[in-house]
Length: 371
Image 1 (cartoon, helix red, strand yellow):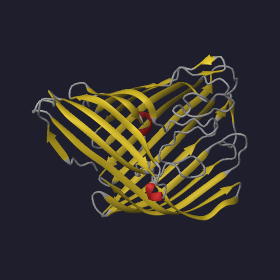
Image 2 (cartoon, rainbow, N blue to C red):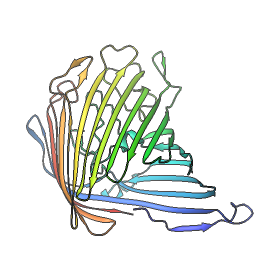
Image 3 (cartoon, rainbow, N blue to C red):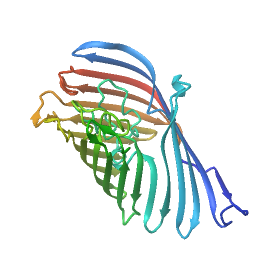
Image 4 (cartoon, rainbow, N blue to C red):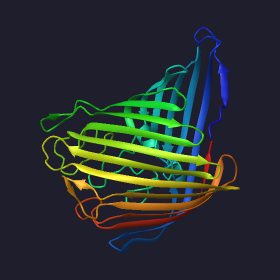
Protein backbone atom coordinates (compact mmCIF):
# COMPACT_ATOMS: atom_id res chain seq x y z
CA UNK A 1 0.00 0.00 0.00
CA UNK A 2 1.52 3.26 -1.16
CA UNK A 3 1.43 6.23 1.18
CA UNK A 4 2.63 9.71 0.40
CA UNK A 5 5.12 10.90 2.99
CA UNK A 6 6.40 14.27 1.90
CA UNK A 7 5.06 17.04 -0.33
CA UNK A 8 7.35 20.05 -0.69
CA UNK A 9 6.64 23.31 -2.51
CA UNK A 10 9.72 24.13 -4.55
CA UNK A 11 10.62 27.79 -4.85
CA UNK A 12 13.69 29.86 -5.61
CA UNK A 13 15.74 31.00 -8.50
CA UNK A 14 16.71 27.52 -9.62
CA UNK A 15 13.41 25.80 -8.81
CA UNK A 16 10.10 25.24 -10.50
CA UNK A 17 7.35 27.85 -10.02
CA UNK A 18 5.90 27.83 -6.52
CA UNK A 19 2.49 26.65 -7.76
CA UNK A 20 4.05 23.30 -8.58
CA UNK A 21 4.85 20.57 -6.06
CA UNK A 22 7.17 17.60 -5.89
CA UNK A 23 5.89 14.53 -4.07
CA UNK A 24 8.12 11.72 -2.81
CA UNK A 25 6.41 8.36 -2.31
CA UNK A 26 8.36 5.35 -0.98
CA UNK A 27 6.91 1.86 -1.43
CA UNK A 28 8.06 -1.48 -0.10
CA UNK A 29 6.97 -5.01 0.60
CA UNK A 30 8.44 -8.01 2.32
CA UNK A 31 7.05 -11.51 1.89
CA UNK A 32 8.84 -14.35 3.67
CA UNK A 33 7.82 -17.90 4.53
CA UNK A 34 9.13 -20.95 6.32
CA UNK A 35 8.91 -23.70 3.71
CA UNK A 36 9.00 -27.48 3.89
CA UNK A 37 9.47 -28.80 0.38
CA UNK A 38 10.19 -31.99 -1.51
CA UNK A 39 11.34 -32.75 -5.07
CA UNK A 40 11.32 -35.90 -7.16
CA UNK A 41 12.88 -36.90 -10.47
CA UNK A 42 11.19 -39.90 -12.12
CA UNK A 43 9.62 -40.82 -8.79
CA UNK A 44 12.88 -40.75 -6.83
CA UNK A 45 13.35 -38.16 -4.09
CA UNK A 46 15.99 -35.56 -4.85
CA UNK A 47 14.95 -33.35 -1.93
CA UNK A 48 13.15 -34.84 1.04
CA UNK A 49 11.75 -32.67 3.81
CA UNK A 50 13.81 -29.70 2.68
CA UNK A 51 13.46 -26.76 5.05
CA UNK A 52 14.21 -23.17 4.15
CA UNK A 53 13.16 -19.55 4.46
CA UNK A 54 11.75 -18.50 1.10
CA UNK A 55 11.21 -15.04 -0.28
CA UNK A 56 8.17 -14.17 -2.36
CA UNK A 57 10.03 -12.56 -5.23
CA UNK A 58 12.57 -10.85 -3.03
CA UNK A 59 12.27 -7.87 -0.75
CA UNK A 60 11.46 -4.77 -2.76
CA UNK A 61 11.73 -1.05 -2.18
CA UNK A 62 10.78 1.69 -4.58
CA UNK A 63 10.93 5.48 -4.74
CA UNK A 64 8.51 7.49 -6.82
CA UNK A 65 8.76 11.20 -7.49
CA UNK A 66 5.97 13.20 -9.11
CA UNK A 67 6.00 16.84 -10.13
CA UNK A 68 2.70 18.62 -10.78
CA UNK A 69 3.26 20.63 -13.95
CA UNK A 70 -0.20 22.13 -13.98
CA UNK A 71 -2.95 21.90 -16.60
CA UNK A 72 -3.60 18.24 -15.75
CA UNK A 73 -0.01 17.13 -16.44
CA UNK A 74 2.57 15.58 -14.13
CA UNK A 75 6.18 14.46 -14.53
CA UNK A 76 7.16 11.21 -12.86
CA UNK A 77 10.32 9.28 -11.99
CA UNK A 78 10.46 5.84 -10.40
CA UNK A 79 13.29 3.55 -9.26
CA UNK A 80 12.75 0.04 -7.90
CA UNK A 81 15.19 -2.27 -6.13
CA UNK A 82 15.13 -5.88 -4.96
CA UNK A 83 17.27 -7.58 -2.35
CA UNK A 84 17.62 -10.92 -0.62
CA UNK A 85 19.27 -9.45 2.48
CA UNK A 86 16.63 -11.09 4.77
CA UNK A 87 17.82 -14.47 3.45
CA UNK A 88 21.41 -13.75 4.41
CA UNK A 89 22.66 -12.48 1.04
CA UNK A 90 23.97 -9.24 2.48
CA UNK A 91 25.70 -8.13 -0.72
CA UNK A 92 22.74 -8.77 -3.03
CA UNK A 93 21.00 -5.50 -3.83
CA UNK A 94 20.00 -4.86 -7.42
CA UNK A 95 18.03 -2.41 -9.51
CA UNK A 96 14.88 -3.56 -11.24
CA UNK A 97 12.26 -1.34 -12.84
CA UNK A 98 12.92 2.35 -13.33
CA UNK A 99 11.57 5.03 -15.61
CA UNK A 100 10.79 8.69 -16.24
CA UNK A 101 7.60 9.87 -17.89
CA UNK A 102 4.79 12.33 -18.40
CA UNK A 103 1.14 11.77 -17.53
CA UNK A 104 -1.75 13.83 -18.89
CA UNK A 105 -5.40 13.67 -17.96
CA UNK A 106 -6.27 14.01 -21.64
CA UNK A 107 -3.88 11.67 -23.52
CA UNK A 108 -2.60 9.24 -20.87
CA UNK A 109 0.98 8.43 -19.86
CA UNK A 110 4.18 7.93 -21.83
CA UNK A 111 7.27 6.56 -20.09
CA UNK A 112 10.72 5.20 -20.89
CA UNK A 113 13.09 2.98 -18.97
CA UNK A 114 13.05 -0.62 -17.70
CA UNK A 115 9.75 -2.30 -16.97
CA UNK A 116 7.71 -5.48 -16.71
CA UNK A 117 5.07 -4.83 -19.32
CA UNK A 118 1.38 -5.54 -19.73
CA UNK A 119 1.62 -8.99 -21.35
CA UNK A 120 2.97 -10.38 -18.08
CA UNK A 121 1.43 -8.18 -15.40
CA UNK A 122 -2.01 -8.15 -17.01
CA UNK A 123 -2.51 -11.80 -16.08
CA UNK A 124 -1.34 -11.67 -12.47
CA UNK A 125 -4.71 -12.57 -11.00
CA UNK A 126 -3.62 -15.39 -8.68
CA UNK A 127 -4.39 -13.61 -5.41
CA UNK A 128 -0.74 -13.69 -4.34
CA UNK A 129 0.56 -10.97 -6.65
CA UNK A 130 2.68 -13.71 -8.29
CA UNK A 131 4.84 -13.59 -5.14
CA UNK A 132 5.59 -17.30 -5.30
CA UNK A 133 5.90 -17.51 -9.11
CA UNK A 134 9.08 -19.52 -9.05
CA UNK A 135 11.29 -21.31 -6.62
CA UNK A 136 10.19 -24.81 -7.63
CA UNK A 137 12.30 -27.28 -9.56
CA UNK A 138 9.73 -27.70 -12.34
CA UNK A 139 10.15 -24.14 -13.59
CA UNK A 140 6.38 -23.80 -14.11
CA UNK A 141 4.09 -21.98 -11.72
CA UNK A 142 0.61 -20.66 -11.11
CA UNK A 143 1.41 -16.95 -10.82
CA UNK A 144 2.20 -16.24 -14.48
CA UNK A 145 2.28 -19.34 -16.73
CA UNK A 146 4.13 -17.77 -19.63
CA UNK A 147 7.00 -20.24 -20.22
CA UNK A 148 7.69 -22.61 -23.10
CA UNK A 149 9.42 -25.63 -21.59
CA UNK A 150 11.47 -26.91 -24.54
CA UNK A 151 12.97 -23.68 -25.90
CA UNK A 152 12.99 -22.03 -22.48
CA UNK A 153 11.43 -18.81 -23.78
CA UNK A 154 9.54 -16.93 -21.07
CA UNK A 155 7.21 -13.94 -21.35
CA UNK A 156 7.64 -13.32 -17.61
CA UNK A 157 10.38 -10.80 -18.10
CA UNK A 158 11.84 -7.41 -17.39
CA UNK A 159 12.56 -5.45 -20.57
CA UNK A 160 15.50 -3.16 -20.04
CA UNK A 161 15.16 -0.48 -22.72
CA UNK A 162 11.52 0.40 -23.38
CA UNK A 163 9.16 3.19 -24.37
CA UNK A 164 5.51 2.66 -23.49
CA UNK A 165 2.17 4.44 -23.53
CA UNK A 166 -0.98 3.87 -21.47
CA UNK A 167 -4.16 5.57 -22.55
CA UNK A 168 -6.57 7.29 -20.19
CA UNK A 169 -9.63 5.26 -19.24
CA UNK A 170 -12.44 5.72 -21.72
CA UNK A 171 -15.42 4.38 -19.82
CA UNK A 172 -13.28 1.56 -18.40
CA UNK A 173 -11.48 0.85 -21.70
CA UNK A 174 -7.66 1.21 -21.63
CA UNK A 175 -5.00 0.60 -24.30
CA UNK A 176 -1.32 -0.16 -23.61
CA UNK A 177 1.52 -0.18 -26.13
CA UNK A 178 5.22 -0.83 -25.55
CA UNK A 179 8.23 -0.83 -27.86
CA UNK A 180 11.30 -2.66 -26.55
CA UNK A 181 14.67 -1.54 -27.86
CA UNK A 182 17.10 -4.42 -27.97
CA UNK A 183 20.89 -4.10 -27.67
CA UNK A 184 21.66 -3.79 -31.40
CA UNK A 185 25.07 -4.06 -32.98
CA UNK A 186 25.92 -7.61 -31.97
CA UNK A 187 26.80 -10.29 -34.52
CA UNK A 188 26.45 -14.06 -34.27
CA UNK A 189 28.23 -15.78 -37.15
CA UNK A 190 27.42 -13.73 -40.24
CA UNK A 191 24.13 -12.50 -38.82
CA UNK A 192 23.92 -8.98 -37.41
CA UNK A 193 21.53 -8.62 -34.47
CA UNK A 194 18.84 -5.98 -34.28
CA UNK A 195 16.91 -7.20 -31.24
CA UNK A 196 13.59 -5.51 -30.62
CA UNK A 197 10.09 -6.27 -29.45
CA UNK A 198 6.65 -4.85 -28.92
CA UNK A 199 3.55 -5.42 -26.83
CA UNK A 200 -0.03 -4.28 -27.44
CA UNK A 201 -2.94 -4.75 -25.03
CA UNK A 202 -6.53 -3.69 -24.54
CA UNK A 203 -8.53 -3.94 -21.30
CA UNK A 204 -12.10 -3.20 -20.31
CA UNK A 205 -13.19 -3.30 -16.69
CA UNK A 206 -15.89 -2.17 -14.29
CA UNK A 207 -16.75 -3.05 -10.70
CA UNK A 208 -17.72 -6.62 -11.62
CA UNK A 209 -15.80 -7.67 -14.75
CA UNK A 210 -12.36 -7.40 -16.30
CA UNK A 211 -11.53 -8.60 -19.82
CA UNK A 212 -8.10 -8.07 -21.37
CA UNK A 213 -6.12 -9.30 -24.35
CA UNK A 214 -2.46 -8.76 -25.23
CA UNK A 215 -0.03 -9.68 -27.99
CA UNK A 216 3.76 -9.61 -27.85
CA UNK A 217 6.57 -10.29 -30.29
CA UNK A 218 10.36 -10.31 -29.89
CA UNK A 219 13.00 -10.78 -32.61
CA UNK A 220 16.76 -11.38 -32.84
CA UNK A 221 17.24 -12.64 -29.31
CA UNK A 222 19.33 -15.62 -28.30
CA UNK A 223 22.87 -16.58 -27.45
CA UNK A 224 25.43 -13.81 -27.37
CA UNK A 225 24.62 -10.10 -27.30
CA UNK A 226 21.41 -9.27 -25.49
CA UNK A 227 20.71 -12.75 -24.14
CA UNK A 228 20.06 -11.46 -20.62
CA UNK A 229 17.29 -9.19 -21.82
CA UNK A 230 15.88 -11.29 -24.60
CA UNK A 231 15.44 -14.69 -23.07
CA UNK A 232 18.66 -16.67 -22.98
CA UNK A 233 19.74 -19.50 -25.26
CA UNK A 234 17.59 -21.48 -27.64
CA UNK A 235 17.80 -25.20 -28.33
CA UNK A 236 20.16 -25.64 -31.30
CA UNK A 237 20.69 -21.90 -31.80
CA UNK A 238 23.73 -20.86 -33.84
CA UNK A 239 22.38 -17.67 -35.38
CA UNK A 240 20.79 -15.48 -32.73
CA UNK A 241 18.08 -14.64 -35.27
CA UNK A 242 15.17 -15.91 -33.23
CA UNK A 243 11.58 -14.80 -32.93
CA UNK A 244 8.99 -15.29 -30.20
CA UNK A 245 5.32 -14.34 -30.15
CA UNK A 246 2.44 -14.66 -27.74
CA UNK A 247 -1.29 -14.04 -27.41
CA UNK A 248 -2.85 -13.72 -23.96
CA UNK A 249 -6.52 -13.44 -22.97
CA UNK A 250 -7.59 -12.86 -19.33
CA UNK A 251 -11.00 -12.67 -17.65
CA UNK A 252 -11.99 -11.89 -14.03
CA UNK A 253 -15.43 -11.78 -12.40
CA UNK A 254 -15.61 -10.02 -9.01
CA UNK A 255 -18.52 -10.12 -6.54
CA UNK A 256 -19.01 -9.54 -2.83
CA UNK A 257 -17.98 -13.12 -2.01
CA UNK A 258 -14.67 -12.92 -3.94
CA UNK A 259 -13.66 -13.49 -7.56
CA UNK A 260 -13.09 -16.06 -10.27
CA UNK A 261 -10.58 -15.66 -13.07
CA UNK A 262 -9.13 -17.44 -16.09
CA UNK A 263 -6.25 -16.76 -18.47
CA UNK A 264 -4.73 -18.46 -21.50
CA UNK A 265 -1.43 -18.01 -23.38
CA UNK A 266 -0.71 -19.18 -26.93
CA UNK A 267 3.05 -18.88 -27.46
CA UNK A 268 5.77 -19.79 -29.96
CA UNK A 269 9.51 -19.31 -30.38
CA UNK A 270 11.65 -20.16 -33.40
CA UNK A 271 15.10 -19.82 -34.94
CA UNK A 272 14.43 -17.98 -38.20
CA UNK A 273 17.79 -18.26 -39.95
CA UNK A 274 19.45 -21.61 -40.46
CA UNK A 275 18.12 -24.18 -38.01
CA UNK A 276 15.25 -26.11 -39.54
CA UNK A 277 12.48 -27.52 -37.41
CA UNK A 278 13.10 -25.43 -34.29
CA UNK A 279 9.67 -23.86 -33.83
CA UNK A 280 8.38 -24.50 -30.31
CA UNK A 281 4.66 -23.89 -29.75
CA UNK A 282 2.64 -24.26 -26.58
CA UNK A 283 -0.59 -23.23 -24.87
CA UNK A 284 -1.21 -22.71 -21.17
CA UNK A 285 -4.41 -22.29 -19.16
CA UNK A 286 -4.91 -21.01 -15.64
CA UNK A 287 -7.88 -20.77 -13.28
CA UNK A 288 -8.06 -18.82 -10.02
CA UNK A 289 -10.58 -18.26 -7.26
CA UNK A 290 -10.62 -16.07 -4.16
CA UNK A 291 -13.29 -16.54 -1.49
CA UNK A 292 -13.65 -13.83 1.14
CA UNK A 293 -14.02 -14.62 4.84
CA UNK A 294 -14.57 -12.36 7.84
CA UNK A 295 -10.86 -11.91 8.57
CA UNK A 296 -9.17 -12.98 5.37
CA UNK A 297 -9.60 -15.08 2.26
CA UNK A 298 -9.11 -18.56 0.80
CA UNK A 299 -7.25 -18.64 -2.51
CA UNK A 300 -6.91 -21.50 -4.99
CA UNK A 301 -5.14 -21.71 -8.36
CA UNK A 302 -4.74 -24.34 -11.05
CA UNK A 303 -2.56 -24.09 -14.15
CA UNK A 304 -1.65 -26.46 -16.97
CA UNK A 305 0.49 -26.48 -20.11
CA UNK A 306 -0.60 -28.68 -22.97
CA UNK A 307 1.86 -30.97 -24.76
CA UNK A 308 4.13 -28.79 -26.91
CA UNK A 309 4.84 -28.85 -30.64
CA UNK A 310 8.48 -28.82 -31.68
CA UNK A 311 9.47 -28.62 -35.32
CA UNK A 312 5.86 -29.19 -36.31
CA UNK A 313 5.60 -32.43 -34.32
CA UNK A 314 3.50 -32.91 -31.19
CA UNK A 315 5.82 -34.07 -28.40
CA UNK A 316 4.19 -36.64 -26.13
CA UNK A 317 4.46 -36.10 -22.36
CA UNK A 318 5.72 -32.51 -22.77
CA UNK A 319 3.12 -30.73 -20.64
CA UNK A 320 3.11 -29.47 -17.08
CA UNK A 321 0.60 -28.65 -14.38
CA UNK A 322 0.39 -27.22 -10.90
CA UNK A 323 -1.92 -25.97 -8.20
CA UNK A 324 -1.84 -24.05 -4.96
CA UNK A 325 -4.32 -23.48 -2.16
CA UNK A 326 -3.93 -21.21 0.83
CA UNK A 327 -5.43 -18.92 3.41
CA UNK A 328 -4.46 -15.28 4.04
CA UNK A 329 -5.39 -13.92 7.48
CA UNK A 330 -5.46 -10.12 7.71
CA UNK A 331 -3.53 -8.66 10.64
CA UNK A 332 -4.04 -5.08 9.41
CA UNK A 333 -4.76 -3.25 6.18
CA UNK A 334 -1.10 -3.70 5.21
CA UNK A 335 -0.15 -7.07 6.72
CA UNK A 336 -1.37 -10.64 6.48
CA UNK A 337 -0.16 -14.01 7.74
CA UNK A 338 -0.67 -17.03 5.52
CA UNK A 339 -0.46 -20.76 5.05
CA UNK A 340 -0.02 -22.10 1.52
CA UNK A 341 0.45 -25.47 -0.14
CA UNK A 342 1.65 -25.84 -3.74
CA UNK A 343 2.44 -28.79 -6.01
CA UNK A 344 3.88 -28.72 -9.53
CA UNK A 345 4.67 -31.42 -12.07
CA UNK A 346 6.61 -31.37 -15.34
CA UNK A 347 6.14 -34.33 -17.68
CA UNK A 348 8.97 -36.50 -19.00
CA UNK A 349 9.64 -34.27 -22.05
CA UNK A 350 8.54 -30.89 -20.67
CA UNK A 351 12.01 -29.41 -21.06
CA UNK A 352 12.88 -31.59 -24.06
CA UNK A 353 15.26 -34.47 -24.64
CA UNK A 354 13.47 -36.80 -22.18
CA UNK A 355 14.84 -34.79 -19.27
CA UNK A 356 12.68 -36.74 -16.83
CA UNK A 357 9.45 -36.27 -14.92
CA UNK A 358 9.95 -33.59 -12.26
CA UNK A 359 7.64 -33.13 -9.27
CA UNK A 360 7.81 -30.47 -6.59
CA UNK A 361 5.66 -29.54 -3.60
CA UNK A 362 5.94 -27.16 -0.67
CA UNK A 363 4.05 -26.21 2.49
CA UNK A 364 4.64 -22.61 3.55
CA UNK A 365 3.89 -20.53 6.63
CA UNK A 366 4.66 -16.84 6.35
CA UNK A 367 3.75 -13.19 6.43
CA UNK A 368 3.61 -10.30 3.96
CA UNK A 369 3.92 -6.62 4.82
CA UNK A 370 3.20 -3.98 2.17
CA UNK A 371 3.63 -0.23 2.44
